[in-house]
Amino acid sequence: MSIRTIVVGAGRMGKNHLRVLREHPAFKVVEVVDPIAAGPGDLRVAKSLDDISADFDLAVIASTTDTHATVATELIKRGKHLLVEKPLASSAAVAREVHALAEQAGVRLAVGHVERFNPAVRKLREVIAASAIGKAIHFSFTRVGGYPAVTGQGNNVILDLAVHDIDVFSFLGGGQAELVSSVAHSTVKSQVIDTATLLLTSASGVTSDVHVNWITPTKIRQIRVTGTLGVCFVDYMMQTCELFGGALLSRTLPDEVNFAQLQSMYANSDKTVFGVEKFEPLKAQATALARFINEGDLGELCGGADAANAVSIAEQASSLPRR
Image 1 (cartoon, rainbow, N blue to C red):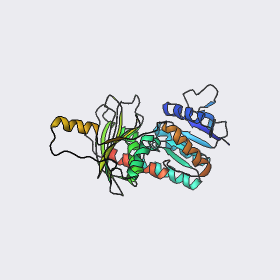
Image 2 (spheres, rainbow, N blue to C red):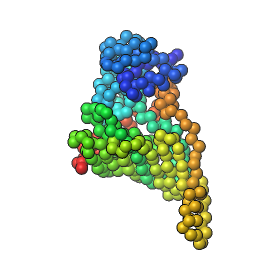
Image 3 (cartoon, rainbow, N blue to C red):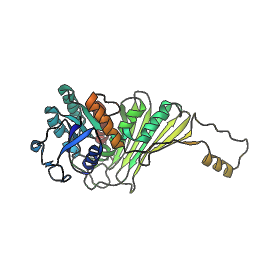
Image 4 (cartoon, rainbow, N blue to C red):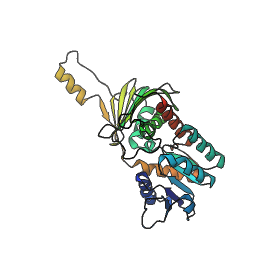
């Protein structure tokens, strides 16, 4: 039986969820909720939660960040299962409250940290697990590009962008991340953080830096992982994964070599490009979501506790003095 689903919020992400869910055989979208935007012509659009007419099992919340917790809380009280777009809430305390409320109500709650389902991230996870770079020591994340048309109440580049990589670091780095330090800038709007660099650590001892900004005029979404035997590069958008050095490769250098030969050797050897089967992460997340709703298996989905931790780190980083 298809999972009867509503989508709350018909903006950019809401439209993406709507498209993916309507194409997926496990779901039947029965209604859209948005006070302003219009939905597809064949679906009723409710203007509020109280205006919903269809019976449903699952709500996908893709409204603005400042409404996530309020909408989620109301639907948890109605006993509905949820996928909430990241971040779970605008503050860590509220995110924890939503998570606790869902557990108390027996409601299945997942949070849309979709980069967990990026095939390049999954390949990187395999590379790390196989010790192809030796022992992972440090992760470096870059996620930059493009000031949003609307920043939203209480939003900033850390809450908007860095939570992705905070979660990926926890997912790949061996346990929940902790904030060591951060530095941030407000360069366009005086009260809005638009550039930040965070330094993180984890229980496993692996460290990470995360750089985000809304200033760079082009989008860059990358990971670099340094290990004891090599370094691995991932491009989120191009879905590529490349290894330099590492246990998979062997390099021998002659006793004497000139600069041109050295450049040629490094350009043409000591590198492995992994095959990555490219697919839309949102579709893979939807398949995992169907299993979670039907069987209770969270799998690789982000749960409420991990999502609340990402918000907590973003909140801590945002509250430190900025330049």
